[in-house]
Length: 236
Image (cartoon, rainbow, N blue to C red; front, side):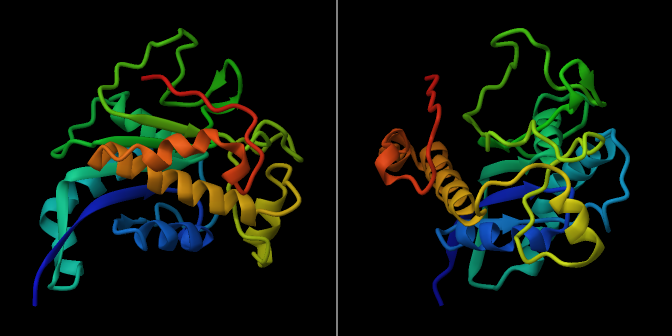
């Protein structure tokens, strides 16, 4: 049987990985190996994200030796094309890792970085560790493509003490479901946003890995988007 090689994307999420199953499966269906580690059990986590960053580094350094062992024999991981994505607190961890805020050693080089509604703490000037934002324009020294997707709702918590906003599905039940529904205001439905994020991530990764910009440029066309886009900026 012929072997196929696929690029890899690591998703860093501090909440249950099942919350993101539809998003992860959509990305994988477009020819990516998606790695979604479970960093925590439950929601009882500290405000600082040092552990998140260190865990993401360990997972990255595990890929060369460990990933192939859990893949089907006919599937090969292309570790020259690796993307890193994070949502909310996971976005903070992703940026912290690639900005080397903790002087963490990485054995692989990332080719793309994605922040999905990333946060950096409790509020502006109330950053948690490790601090990401410098509030100085163009201060990030990153040599890879970066995309940031904002929902426009992350800064409006229902309960102000909750600083990190997950995007759990509407049907999430139990204590975790109650907690996630209290973290920030929601729109009418999460489905359009989930569809948009999945498509945007895929188009960005294809542009970053394969230099295919056709669909990425289509993001500027609001008529083709499942959500209303307030601002679309490209910095080339």
